[in-house]
Amino acid sequence: MDITWHLNDPPLNPHSWYSWSTEELLSIVRTSDNDQLTSVLLRAFAQGLSRRDGWQIDRLPPEFIPLMIAAAAMYKRGVAISNRPGQGRQGHYQVLLANHMAHRSDYLPPTKDCFFVLDQQVADLYPSWGAHADLLQLAAETEKNLDTVRHMASKIAKGHSKQQIVIVGGGMLTDSAAFAAHLLKRPFILVPTTLLAMVDACVGGKTGVNFPPYGKNQLGAFAFPETVVIFPQFLKTLPLRELRSGGAECLKHAFLTHQLSLIETTASFIQEERREDWAELLPQLLAVKAQIIEKDTGEQGVRAYLNLGHTLAHGLEALSQQRKGNDEGGIISHGEAVGIGLAFALQLSSSLGALSPATAHAYQTALERSGCLITHEQLAHYLGCSLADKDLWPSLLRILTHDKKNTSANGQLSWVILQHPGAEPARVVSLTASYVEEQWREILRRLNKDF
Ligand SMILES: NC(=O)c1ccc[n+]([C@@H]2O[C@H](COP(=O)([O-])OP(=O)(O)OC[C@H]3O[C@@H](n4cnc5c(N)ncnc54)[C@H](O)[C@@H]3O)[C@@H](O)[C@H]2O)c1
Image (cartoon, rainbow, N blue to C red; front, side, top):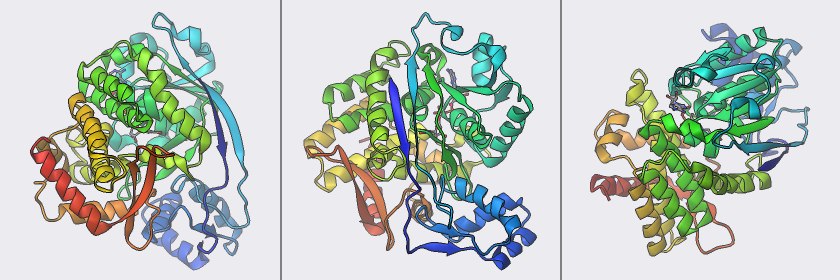
């Protein structure tokens, strides 16, 4: 599969420039315990700057300009800077699906020429890959941060004779190591090893890290691999929790096709805990994302459809991390959060009349049957409180309002809902916080009854 991408300037609201002053910068740089880049980023979040607010930096002393350019380039995956018009970029890359008999060397350049960044677990499970690792990284969502990226970048820079970087792991590693490669302006190849990374994270060019307390993937860049090579054999060792986690993204893609047969086949693959034969299904599911990002790489239009289920999912993940940050096993996984997000999106789509109750019911049944929906008790465990806790919704709402994909104003929240039939498979709607709260209470009631 060949994927073409086009990127234009970051979206910009011309009436909304944030003017950085020298006094402001001096005060944050002098008073903060953090490094200068982190201090500027924290300040931008604290000011509530959106992706559409350009940064006015002309009046700053020249020594601050490189710092501000670096911060703006990664803030919410890039915001506009005054007097520095961004340039359109485009390119393409191939996604190769390796034959089940394939050997690494059939698809990847010789190991002596590449810097291999490997997921620690993958290296342990696949010693022939581990033997070539130049850098091992623990895949834990709490490790997906700016410090990890800096550490990776410095290690990669030290291995400078090996120009090309090969990143082998799940979405956590591909997101953060590809961001490190981008900061170093190095070419990279992605080898996804989880179902989630194969069907989703490895295509589309989104790289980045979380930025607590401001949430998931708040810093990053659009950066594109030279090639993606999928070896479906890696799925043989994937734990069930991770299989279901990726399964939720597979179902999201299947929902966006509105093809009930694909939705049901995908649900069956996950329900049957299949770790083989995914090569049959992956091309169809990957094609959904590929077609959308070819139309809108920079997320200024239809790419928003891929956020189906993700607004709530990101809120739940961030909340779980805030509350259970020291307990890795106690944090909800991305896919588990997406499973609940999808159930929520189906409920919204049906209650807003965009999906008929019968269609919503059929999709919901597939979601439940797949095993991708966690229980009421599991959700309570991951959030560290009873789901009846009166602080739960206000805490979630605070995070949802900060979500960088929330483009609605006046206290409203934007959500992607499915629509069928219709010219487009989905659409973005703005909903009041009180309506969303009502729907949140309803989904908790339904989860409690295990649907
Ligand atoms: N860039 C994007 O477009 C995009 C899209 C979706 C999700 N994501 C991101 O992806 C991340 C989640 O990725 P993930 O679900 O792949 O999780 P992950 O990378 O954290 O991996 C999950 C676990 O599986 C282990 N693992 C990896 N490959 C394995 C294998 N073959 N066998 C056994 N164990 C294996 C890892 O060590 C880890 O413990 C999140 O941070 C999410 O934000 C990014």
